[in-house]
Amino acid sequence: MIAVKRVYDPPAASDGTRVLIMRLWPRGIRKSRVDIWLKELGPVLPLLRAFRAGEIGWAEYRRRYRRGLARPEAQAHVAAVRAYAKAGRVTLLCGCPDEARCHRSLLRAYLLD
Image (cartoon, rainbow, N blue to C red; front, side, top):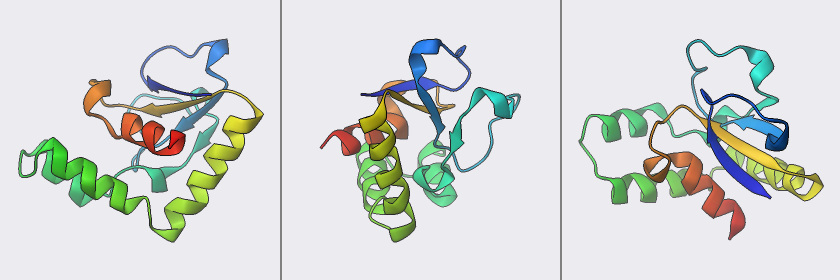
C-alpha cells in the first residue's frame, strides 16, 4: 500500500516506510522523521519554481513532472519505492500544504498504475 502525507504532520506507526520525495530538505524536520530521502522523485527546481510563480498551470506541471519520472535516475527510485510497497506500507512525504495539487499525489498515482 502507498499512502501520502505532509512531512510536517506527526509520524504514526501506521506510516510504514516514510519516504521523503523533495529536492531540498524541509526546514525544521529532523532526519529521524524520515526513513529514506529520494530527492530524484521530487520535481526539478525550475519546474517547481515555475509552478509556484504561476508561470505554468497545474495541467502543465503534471505533464512535466510525469515526464521527469521517465529519467533513468528517477526510474531506479521508482523501482525501489515499488519494492518497499510490496514489503509493507509506504508513505510518500512532501511539504506541500495541498495534497490535491502536490507531486506526492501524482507520484502515488504513477506508482499505482
